[in-house]
Amino acid sequence: MALILSSYMFSEFGFDNLAFAQQSVGFREYIDQFDGYSFKYPQNWIQVRGAGADIFFRDPFVLDENLSVELSSPSSSKYKSVEDLGPPQEAAKKVLKQYLTEFMSTRLGVRRESNILSTSSRVADDGKLYYQVEVNIKSYANNNELAVMPQERVVRLEWDRRYLSVLGVENNQLYELRLQTPENVFVEEENDLRKVMDSFRVNKVAV
Image (cartoon, rainbow, N blue to C red; front, side):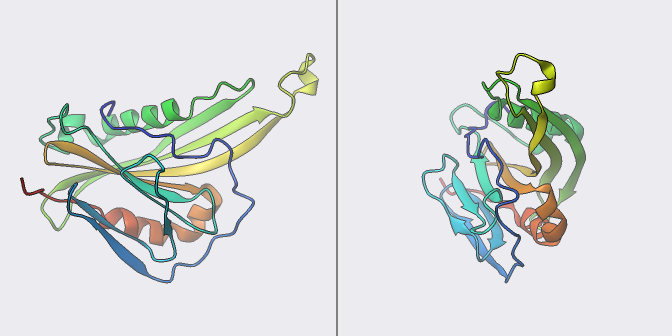
């Protein structure tokens, strides 16, 4: 998992309460023939260029909701199967560690709580094996981190997010579809987000 080209594409501060979830009005398909993957996404989501990932889309209304795809380096990775990561539970630990590394903060008084919610594997209609991982990460911070007295430092919840990853291997590379959404939005949009996850495919690239 360390070979995945990580990018700090998620905001350090949450905006869970600044927007409201929109009902999906259908899906579009994104196909990358050059890198070898495809997926479906809500048609009202917009592409953001220069975000650091291979591809990045976000919800225009829920600022903390987005998806991206990460690829391991083709020159330094020789994956044969997603099982090279170990069983799904071991892959989930690597995924969570990667997220926490990306979200490390130098601010005083910041604390992160994380849990692996579920792991699974499935063989899709393309005959390939995929892992699915779901984790929750909460960020807490003191309202006055420079205060001298403990009673002056009140801990508040900054954000509470669900992260969903789909892992697949093709072309000797590890592919990861990432979805980020606030937990309160996930409750409303779970069906649509799972459709996105289930649509992810990795494809052989012609040399």
